[in-house]
Image (cartoon, rainbow, N blue to C red; front, top):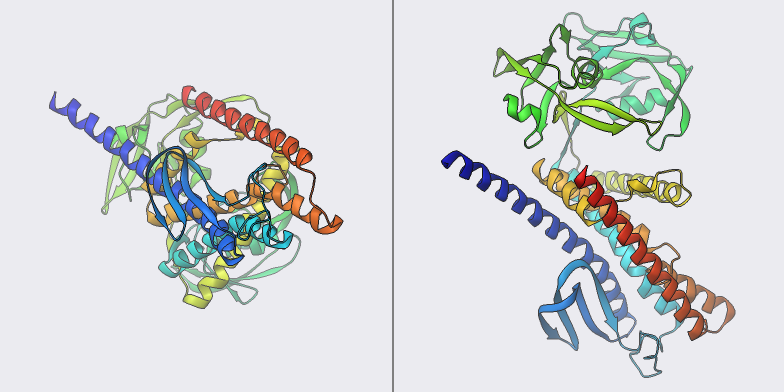
Amino acid sequence: MFEISSISLEAVSAVGFKIFAFLVGLAALIFVHELGHFLAARKCGVIVEKFSIGFGKKLFGTTSQGTEFIIAAIPLGGYVKMKGEELGEETNEEGSFSAAPPHHRLLIAFAGPFFNFLFALAIYVFVYMAGVETIGPVIGTVKTNSPALEAGLQTGDKIISVNNKPIRFWSELQKKVYNSPGEKLDFQIERLTKGIINLEITPTTEEIKNLFGDTEQVGLIGITPLSNTISYIKKESAAEKAGLQLNDRIIAVGDTKIFGWSDLRPAAVDKPGESLTFKVQRNGTEILIPLIPTLKTIKDENEKDLEIGEIGIGMSGRMVLEQYGLLGSIVRAMKETWEMTALIAISVQKMLFGSIPADQIGGPILIFQIYGEQAEQGFNEFMRLTALLSINLGLINLLPIPILDGGHILFFLIEIIQGRPVSEKSRELAQQVGLFMLISLMVFAFYNDIVRVIN
């Protein structure tokens, strides 16, 4: 009885932690977005009547300088209520939103999404000043019949530079090779047995599929990073039940040596339900651990069902710390913000045009699950996810859909161009259409979330 109670308490504690992480992250995103609207309105002389985090029944609130600040019961959004903002409430009185010049109204509408981008940028600056662990440029596997094997690269080699440009992280090496198909590259490597040596390698031109399933031509040399140290264990997974621990180094599965995911997949992931033996190194001692991968059905690239063995671990290699001073962190944060913005923009575009299946759309339940998982992996991962979702919130709100900030911005631009406001009837009709679209999207996202949980 005591053991069952302990497991139950642990499960409740884990769920409570995920709920807390979800609510904190979501509240931060909402607050920053609405703060943008609030500060811009104050700057433009518009009276803000309410500043609410959440919808529905007011839980508590306070009034300051004419604005009522509210925490409401449903924490899935928020709003800033300005004087004369709603249709039918428009007035020419001083301090009214409707009486403000159109460029002021446009600025107020744009400020919310803009603050989401600033928030993401600030998070990335903080994260890179604190330091981010990333994969170092140490080779795990060298594929047969590859340029790397022909040149003499070996497992355990550390890439120091390519064409005299220092390589600190695997991502830098990957980017350089990807962008150099058919181009001869000078590699300087460090090998334990021989010290520093130089090799010439020419990446072959090959077609790969990117994150969105699109085909692109890149340079490849046939290597993967050393990545066989367990850095994450999923709750109640096959790995946890078998007794695998964080920082265990997986040396082999059966007779297959493990240097990274490319080795683990054929050795274990492709063997659902089979009894396997994991040889791991723990605190300098090699031990054998029996493990049976859990059967899981996923969709392959052709949307067909594929059965795999889920182990429930994350693996990392020889990690290095990517860390900068204030100026370097700002530069790195701007790059990261731009890259994530472009990635999300392409994702939204492909989803709108059907290139990405509609069942990939997620709602609050999916965000809750992801927030919990990232929070378990550490504060830095939690913050980086918050930055990513902040960018996503900013971009979504800029879509020219009535009821969203982007729809308001579109109306204000039309007003500036034609010299008069869009008619009240047209705006009312557009808002009804926009509200219908938004509610439909939310219902669909909830449906997808529920289907995922059931499956």
